[in-house]
Length: 104
Image 1 (cartoon, helix red, strand yellow):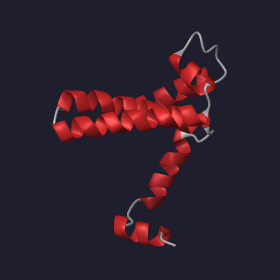
Image 2: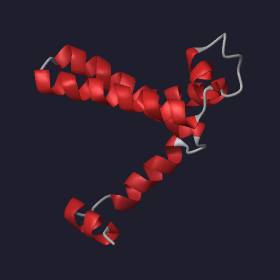
Image 3: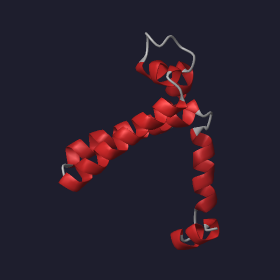
């Protein structure tokens, strides 16, 4: 089990927990829209650190992004396994080909 698997399992276990007892439960109780907003905020912070070139801060912000991505997914009942299956499905496909296949 990877650290992401462990984190996803912890987040899933916090669904429905008392929001006063857990930051994750509090976020999830605020709904998918708030979870998405927090993910966006953390993504912007990671972008800023990437542009600045601060490796330590980028590493920290990237960890926040992954956490908030998993919370956002959990808020919409999308599992990490589903995302990993989608990545596996795309494996071996050129990014250009994959994007062209999705174009309207």
